Picture 1 (cartoon, rainbow, N blue to C red):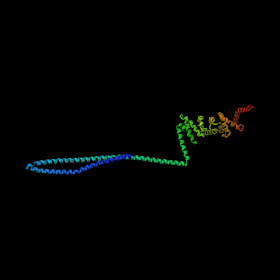
Picture 2 (cartoon, rainbow, N blue to C red):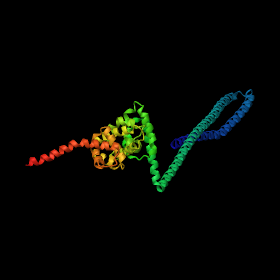
Picture 3 (cartoon, rainbow, N blue to C red):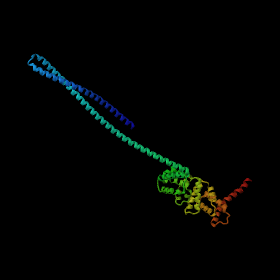
Length: 396
């Protein structure tokens, strides 16, 4: 914009100088003509005086012509001179008129040029004013934008300083806020598009969740179960729920019926420590009889786990050693027997027999179970004795 203004100003200066030079030349010509006009006027006056003298002489000659015929030739000569003088005077008059016309025309041209120059200067001034307005508006807009950017920059710097101060003063709080925001974003994403849980599951398993946040995922699960498009992603959400909320999911009367159909497919995706915690929580709720279906649910949970994890460890430690009272141990024994959990039952009944076979305070039901297991193992003991007896004979 500045270059355009400079060019326009340069153009106006050149045009003004050219016009001024033309005006100066015309003024010089007019001054020359005006200087000649007095001289021409004086010459005309002298010629007029000569003509007047000649006419006076002619008159005198004519008066004496009657008396003297010999002067006729002189008279003719004077007449011819008078005619010549008249022609010269006429030529001088025409020259004078021509000079006057030229002067008037020059004055008119100068006036026209001055008018044109005035118009050009006016147009140039108008254009310059328009460009000035445009530049002013442009500069004002730029100034406002720069001012806004500066204000935003100061605001950003202020917020950055606040964040820095907050981090310096309470890093743990800031970290929790960042994680909370991340969790909120993930929850909103998977709630909107169930397929996104496949992308976010690995990250979700690394984050820490409070038990208070379980309700949000419970609602998502219930919505997905009734949504045909989301059903294929339910297993991913169940893996997450058992991993991150094992205590709540274990024995949950509302959600366990939805968990059981998928349990055989998902339990291997759950870490061993969370599986153990899940079983312990389920065991404790079963022993407390939290609801009427909990025994059936617990047995269905134990069945696939006993086939994959160490049955001996689950039977010996989780279901027996960690259960302190006799009544609870026999309750678990009865559950394993009724649901044919043989891989667990084989180890568990041995522990029960070794602990309570000779106990005098067994209840009738407990003693009956002990005797059943004793009868069950008698054939095995007889076979073992036969093998022992046959062993010396074979050696002999």
